[in-house]
Length: 183
Ligand code: HQG
Image: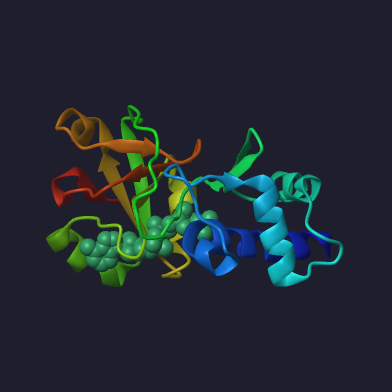
């Protein structure tokens, strides 16, 4: 179906823009953006999509998506979160909502409590604005995920930086366990 094909292409886009632009001969700028035409050329030469990927198709994929993963701005494109490329992608600092959530697997709780909430394989810790989203994030790793409530207001007051991913995803360098409560 069209939707399944869109998800397939979206995953390739995420792989390129979050994890391995070098494999596509691309280099992200410090904010994670790459020239959109260069991106289209690289994606098309690597994957032989039929029909070829175009800006219009990307806009359709973004519209058809369950999450806001990409941003197109002034002829460039970036992934809004999820990065693991070497060299930290800069995101805009902002005042977070008072409360945020993180869905995770029960088997990680002991380590999270001891070591803090850490970015692990990515550049930032990912937090959700609502419980439902945290649930779906957690379900990727545990059929009955644990939901942590983050006292973001207090963490922010205490000097922890928060960055905007999209309207539903907030990013953090780490969250000490004092700010976490398991629901
Ligand atoms: C856990 C997807 C042990 C953390 C999602 C998580 C999200 C620890 C895992 C986005 C730990 C990392 C990101 C510690 C954290 N000890 N485990 N100290 N600190 N962890 O995938 O938040 O669909 O890198 O709880 O929906 O699950 O791809 O992060 O379980 O928005 O667009 O280490 O990726 O979005 O896992 O997911 P991840 P995440 P997309």
